[in-house]
Structure formats: structure tokens, C-alpha cells
Image 1 (cartoon, rainbow, N blue to C red):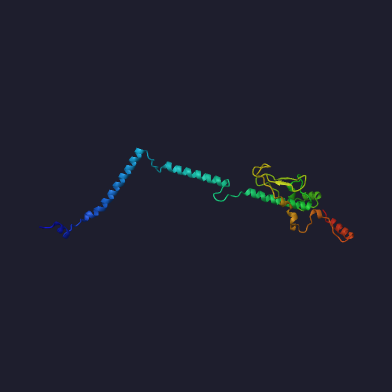
Image 2 (cartoon, rainbow, N blue to C red; image 1 turned 30 degrees about the vertical axis):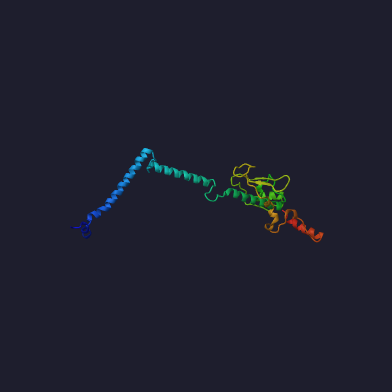
Length: 241
């Protein structure tokens, strides 16, 4: 009697080549079919349950993207113009320029007082610090013999286009000097004020005078005797304007 199992072991069946080639294709088609069924299931489920609609990238989509980019760009430009930086805050230039002008004018007024003996009057204003015309200088020296300017190159409005406020104090002391600031109104919180010590700086450091004596000492002669003192005074009068 022939044992079939023994024969199968001795003579195993040969797999056909076309069956081996067909197996991978069969697996691929099966996977594709499963995916198609899954997509159809999700679509039907969305229809039945009211799921989120699929966003198609058409003209409306790209128009919305452009609109969002324009809005964001406008906000960034507005923030930069208002001095709001994304990192460090932008420093405003005009307040710094006004502070520098306050210091320059305060020191110039101190030098004027060093030579003349008093600050310019309110009527004279700041412009006497910058006199350059010979007729203006002669007239000013007749009124204030110690004047030795100009003390500044020129007087210009503040960075916001307004004139600086200048007034002398009836009780004496440093004059009133300030910029009205961005709002152009005097007495508000954005006014730019000078450092009061800057008015006295020319008296603390006199290296800028090249040996000139301050007004209160001008004309004082220290001599060993009266004859010498008179002789020196006579010589000094020759150089008085």
C-alpha cells in the first residue's frame, strides 16, 4: 500500500512561477481596497454625523491667507512707528535732542553770566547768546561791557518746532528755561527741563575762559602800593570797550 504522506515528502509540489509573481500584486490590491473602504466609511460617517467640512485650497483660501498677512504686517508697522519694539524698546530721538539743547543753552547762559554779571533779561531772550553782527555786538557791549560772545552758534526751535521758554526770575537765581515738549503746551508732564547745576558749571570749571576773571572780580587790582594800583588801572582803561 502506498503512503501518500511519504510520497509528498519525497516529491514536494513545485510552486508555479506565475503564482509567486502574482502574490505581491494580490497583497497590494488588497491594501488599496481596504484603504478605499476606509475612506468611503469616513465620508459616509461625516455625512451622517455632520463632521467638519474639508477645506479646499481654492481662491477663497489663498485670499484669506493674503488678508491675514496684510493685517499682521500692518500691526507690526504700527507698533514700530509707535516705538514698540519686538525686543528692546526703540529710543525716541527728539527728547534726547531736547535734553542736549537744554544743557548747551544752560552752559551758555552760565558763561554769559560769568562775563556780564547777570543772565539776559526776559526781553533780551536767548538770541543775545548768538549775536554775530558787528552792530549788534557793539550795542550789546555798550549795555553789558563784559560780553564776550557768541556763546552758541545759533538759536533754533526745539525738536518739535516750538520756541524754548526763557524767563528771568525776579528773586534771582537760575532763569526759567524749558522745552514745551511734544504736545507744545507749557506746564505739562512732557516738558523737557534742564539740569540746574549746568548753569553754574562755567563757574566751577573755568578752563574755558583762558584766564579771564569773572565779572565780579574784573577791574579789581591787587598791588603793593597805591601808585602801582593806579598805574595798572590807567592801563586797563585803554582796553575797555
